[in-house]
Amino acid sequence: MSESPLSRLTEEQRAHVSIAQASLAHARTLNLAAASPADLVLAVESLRAALHDTLHVVSELAD
Image (cartoon, rainbow, N blue to C red):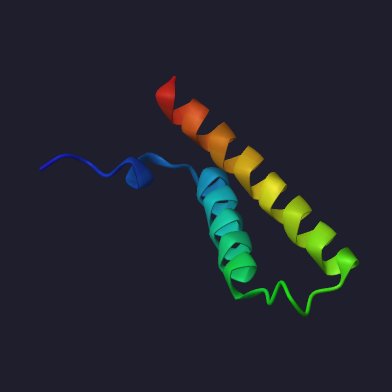
């Protein structure tokens, strides 16, 4: 049985992944029809940051 890639993460990497998961979960629950433009901008910025952090962790794992 192979080792899970998540088991190789450092505490800092796990924190980044956890924040990204929370951002994605929040975005899934956002009512787009009722959200204000400011809420939409915040949601997009949060997702952008989460994607950036996740891609950074993935690139570290690939090295």
